[in-house]
Image (cartoon, rainbow, N blue to C red; front, top):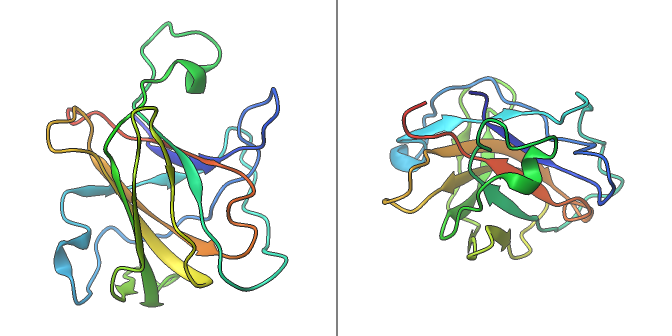
Length: 170
């Protein structure tokens, strides 16, 4: 199963734009447990569109929905039928170096949010720049956590993210 993190426009179509990927599978930073037990997410949208270039630099925030994978036969709109994941912790860490070289070095936690019963979350505004986001479900969840990199800017919240967590058995 491919785990995905994306963001979509509010249209009848599926996700339109998506974040860029990072090529590392582990990290060396002052908090070695940040990536422990998490899988790096494949970041894409259904059309393969790359992330738009930010039109401005500065602080921003993200919002979205944490989902589990849709069941087979769920229909054509798998985002609408996917189970919502409550109580997932979303944490942002600034990338101090290595965002595009394989092993990001992270700064201290910059922000955190928790998904509600509907799986939705809103991260508080954080300074602009490159970040690693970890998405960790509750310990009793049937899903595994993931991490991804993105750039925060004033337009970061324009399109909500959808985060699909893999099953622990995947």
